[in-house]
Image 1 (spheres, rainbow, N blue to C red):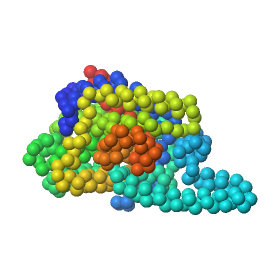
Image 2: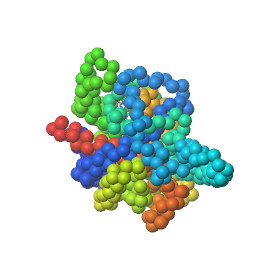
Image 3: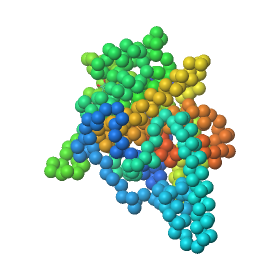
Image 4: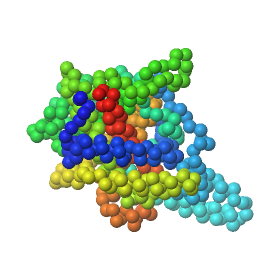
Length: 436
Ligand code: FAD
């Protein structure tokens, strides 16, 4: 079967079988139980940002594209930053309001003024710190923008939405043709098909260096994952007459075969599937690298028992990740001479551009999951290449070091993005069984 992949994953010294076994037996059940927790299922995102590159061509009116809003009351206070123990409480509007409410006597007012002035100084400093921090980011973080809202991911599963045609193709095309590296020949000669043929990617004389291949493989792996999800959660039959998302959802083998099997025109499907494994091992490595930092996180929602349970689950999960036998070796990238700095800069800028392109996706549900997964991958790249996570000891000692801090939105997107790749690999196994 074309989807029974074999051999090593390119640019990484590990085997497809090893990943299949490790993921399906050890990772998949653990990550999914972690992602069901309150801390990980509420994601703050701005879905209203307009497309910075072209006039919005369609805001899909299909009912399967809509994102179900979340009831503010369901979001734990600790996540919103309203709890006294919450790390972000000090600077929320509510915190300020409660200080004003504290009393009208002069001392209270003076004390408010002092707090307010020092808060302002702190906020000014924070702005600069955030600015510096943003230089290392591979994505634009929009959780603090006006229009950002919490979404309950468990109510909005990634699945078939019917988003296709010109709008979807324009996104993929601009991601591949404008933002992937690759020889200029491809940029000019490919009018539509955005893939760079596998034989060219691997050929020594193609002029495509390892970093460029990695970039392409990551994007292609993400593309495969999205398409596997829509095949695995396909609309098999719709209950007529309902305006809700009512229907029967399940795997569609024909759709899967159509997308990934070798065809008359090209033979790339199995390579695209292998790219999914590549994206998986890159994110797996990022989690392993940031493990000392992630072990110290509080995963605070304000619900003591649940938070403790989650911290234990994360410890266990990171312990298992540590046992993976052949992690991706990021130190081989951006290591050759002065040109590598420029290459790294371009790599980051191109990836940031992809994160902006997500605001052009014309289907809200696809936009939600696209943004989440691109942000998760961007966080993984930040961990691997910003240099801030290179020293395990400093990650533990410097837990108060703001410059190392990952924002909640980065942690939530990193785990969820990895969960998507893990689920795709698991679904692939399921398709293999169905096809047998
Ligand atoms: P497409 O997937 O649109 O691919 C276009 C071309 O890219 C193909 O013809 C092929 O040449 C090439 N290609 C395909 N796969 C790869 C790969 N892995 N690597 C390299 N090249 C490849 N639809 C949903 O139903 N649910 C979703 O949640 C969803 N989320 C999306 C999120 C984003 C960010 C985008 C851009 C699209 C999303 N879509 C989603 C749409 C979906 O990805 C497809 O675009 C759509 O189903 C049309 O598929 P297609 O067969 O025309 O090929």
